[in-house]
Image 1 (tube, one colour):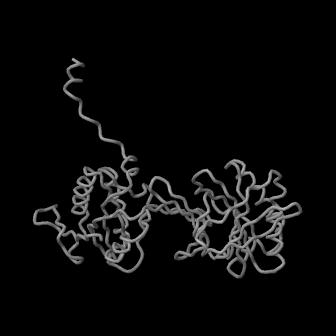
Image 2: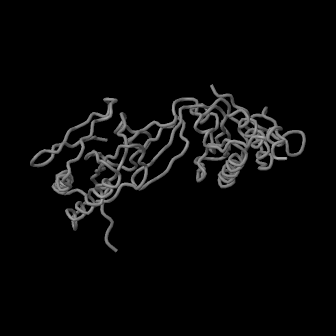
Length: 166
Length: 171
């Protein structure tokens, strides 16, 4: 899986590639106060998917500490987050045939992060409405520790074909 | 290195012995339960933990459990999967139950885990479903060994017996 981080800039956002084999957790930028800036990231991501004209999906979620092994496959799972506490190791994986993970930014609190995630999902759904791209929430649990990071899983191709409307 | 013990029915009704072979492990749940109670009690008294597993290839799985991280709980959450691991703490494996019935194997694993929770330091997730994959026969086995002290802390401490001094004071 390809791993990306994002850096906010005055007039948009810039994408950085992370090499999964580095063995170090990528640094994730704190997001700016203005939520509209965060939507630049998703807009850029979805526009690129729509340009490709392939069936695609974006799954937006919240996580804790990004794993030093992020992007590494284990069976049918891809590692995203990892944290050790009290002798136990908590790992969150992505399941499914996702091709990219984008770490959009770090949030100050879980409540703020949930609000931003809801806003991003709504924004993404509005952008992709009537197109061959679906936008959804990745999962509801798995946050451990003090850090809250917003991420998006991206996949495209026949596996992500939209189900026909009933 | 994890030592493997294959349990077989004992000479007395309802008893079992940890000196069998894979093919001598029985499908008698009451015998497996007695063994489980005995194992869990002994290990809990020594602040050790037990962990119940179901599958088709205990020897291979037990060998794997000796390396790296051991999954304690797994939870599916939309496009995500959350897994809790502990670094391998296991020293012994006890194979208690053998059957060709997949559903029976899963039920036995759930039952034995419930017994483990009732008796002592069983670290399986309460909601674990014990899915068995592959071709029969299916086995249920119990790993025992040292776990991080926090696992022990999570279990209510047994009540201490009152001292003679306090009894005297109550009178």
